Picture 1 (cartoon, rainbow, N blue to C red):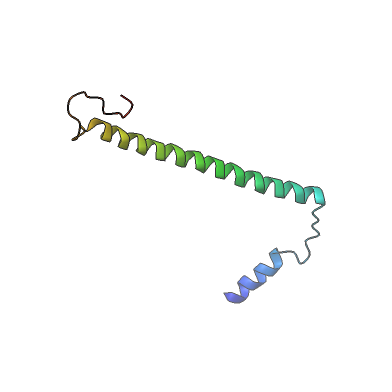
Picture 2: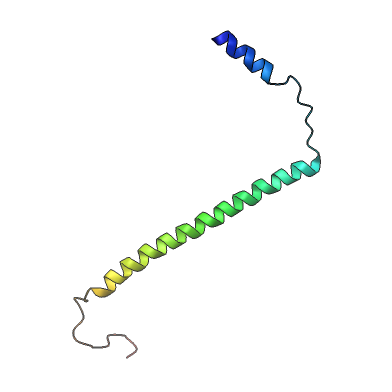
Length: 81
């Protein structure tokens, strides 16, 4: 079994590839990788911002619905009043 796998492996794969990447192709690959990384970073950043703002708004709504224990009536307690 092992011998058959080795024979198939070496008979399917060529010994020489004759491949060439010119500077334009290398530049294209690098630009695609950088652009893809930037797109993924921005996308996940916006998803994270949306999720955190969703939970912050629901948490602040819960706090706003609770009455303030220190408030007495509708008095204005600001220092400039």
